[in-house]
Image 1 (cartoon, rainbow, N blue to C red):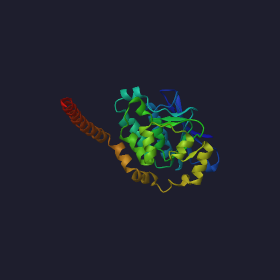
Image 2: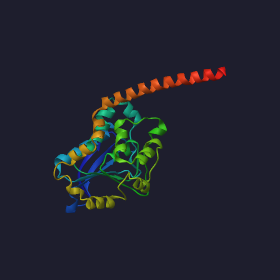
Image 3: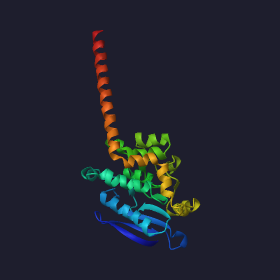
Length: 271
């Protein structure tokens, strides 16, 4: 591989390295971003800032082509958020996580996620915000496991699955916290192929992805395609207001339901 640039991830001593797959001319517009942020590539503010910077460098300093992201850690693509850090960082969702998701959703070149290992929760969401996904057939799972530890998904976390998955797969991902290995993920339509870098390069070639950004409207087309997801990313306060309205309605329904139960029990006791 030919190294183009490196962005440090200061908080973990890690880095994001941008390479071409080889020195061959046909690979000069394929940009592989390999991130290594021990121990499991958590989506922290420092990591996200480095990731967005790497995307910016490619957009503004290199010819249009295709961006491939993968992990330099064998076991993990990304293990999602550091919940403690995310909870203690003011504005984390709006100013970091949504920014990263939005960057991929609207990126003006094709993006391919090469899942070499586990992608849980936010890591799985990040993969879904790419245009294409390739997954190791023999190692790693993708899973949204928030149900298992009681953390509800917010609108931009949920909407990307709703937009890109079939209703049955969407249900299994969210309401069952199902773990999909590579081959099952392919069958479920979560990924486009299984394999590694060779299969990724084959997909890029077969679909002629290196030329898709040439006219300059690739990002615009994606914005229109995923307008509902983009609206959610752009309206954090609106999402919170919607959730507040839902919770208020739930409280009202629950209160009325409890009154009905008490009335039922009261009447039953008179019999």
